[in-house]
Length: 193
Image (cartoon, rainbow, N blue to C red; front, side, top):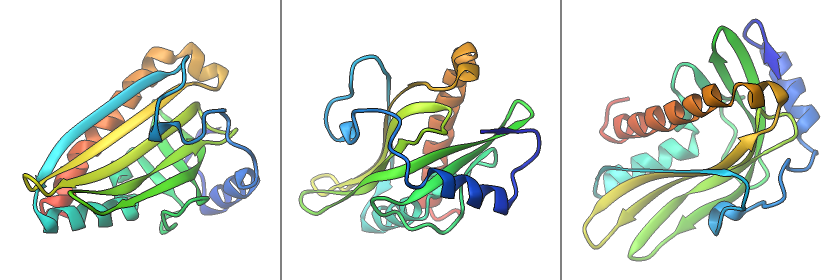
């Protein structure tokens, strides 16, 4: 949904409530935990964000609070929604002089112990989202070499006609989000808040 001015808290609430019970807008729900379906653009971005248990804990805390979206031009609304399977939120973005809300629902949560500790989640698009597909956000702590990594995996394609016409611009925004989200996670886990 597109707006000429920033959507109010009431608009956000009404938008999410209208989307909450709707089905996902794509068939391959959960595919970021396996193989992406054919016909989608796949983006995979990964960066080492530090080493050690403290960095991993800060990374988990950041993902659990959706802070990888705190980029100024994009955020998750409403704030404070716990990352749990079934949680519905909207991605609020301000680009090219307009505002948009895109509805998403958490598909699954990752919380794995072992020689490779993992934490994260994936969300999928709902009918009123500018794209259709799924995106996974994950942090990993490799106990063998103590490295901590932030990993984003997404498969998507344009959903709305406006986005289809502006596909090159949409791809630029997706790439910008990945770059800035990785930079943000590095900042958050280095102790800079």
